[in-house]
Image 1 (cartoon, one colour):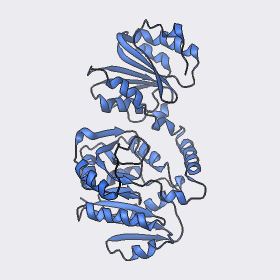
Image 2: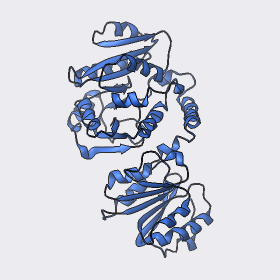
Image 3: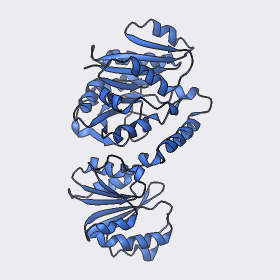
Image 4: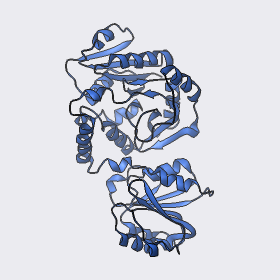
Length: 381
């Protein structure tokens, strides 16, 4: 089995050398091919790439952006898998073998990613090192394949994104509407999941990521690019990308403290199900349910949570005294909402159960039983 590793370069030769040298050092010979698409570098990158005999290279005469460059790489690739890898990454011992093992552990896994030191989407781990040598030593001990460290996610960040070729052929290429880049990974994650595949974060595989090196060169700045492409995502799918980004790990932490293995949990206003999926990763034997008004948010979730489309009144379909926890999305709600929704949902809560009100700024309010005097005291956000 061979993996086609696609790397885009736009100047930053120093980082590109580190990345490619780390692949050569830490990846078994014969298991990969390196494809570099250069977007009109002017810092010596072109000259250096021309000297590399083990790399397939496409030289663009202008900066075509990240999605287009990746698609060019796909079109000349020969591997059984496609791996999109940022050039500001340093890979490590066992990295590709671990990712491949997770990718092929199930037919319904479409793509996998690694953890790192610098990334969004909770794809980082808490680690400190003072040099790449120390990082490499850490990763050599850390990168031991372990199925217990594989977590399903709603999306994966594209700095290291490994996809089966069959999935690429089914889903298609990256959407070039997101040129120059950013948010195309959110789009691709959604498209993969819409085809019935799952995404896995391999927390048993660590690589180093310098972070957004190429995009620092764009005049409009990374934030403006993100805002523009988030708007493009919303126009394409009819839903804001934030629905797929929301994971409330503080809520998971509350539920994780329960000594019970089998819990019935309902999330009202669950969005795309990110928090429910996070709970499932931590407590896999829980029975998870959701209610969400926006049907476009709910994609390929039945295997981890039963999510119904509608308003909070749909809770009436559930038995009384059924839930151990009811999570209520309470963003932008006034004080009257809390008392009214509590009256509706409390009859479906076990005597030993609790309601978790999900508030902005990573705040929650926990009510531990039906007779709580919380509403007599009032609340503030």
